[in-house]
Length: 110
Image (cartoon, rainbow, N blue to C red; front, side, top):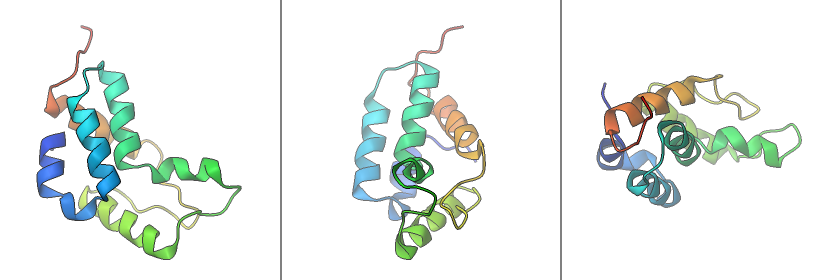
């Protein structure tokens, strides 16, 4: 599966919120280096992995939001978030690295 940001916007729209779509478009238009674009994409697609920073130790998402996030993660072939709202370590970063590599709108230093 060779996903690009454009393909995600076109073929996975049903799994994304309006805010995520807006953030993905910003990443798509941005002209940043590889690492920065990976981080921006990760924040746009998998913001739930940072939500725990805003809460003490419990999952800050409602059950409905958790279900939506897990449907999206499953569509991308990723493990669901656990009861605390955490995703599998590094899987979203690796996913985003592959998407950025296939999108080819970054300036990677060789």
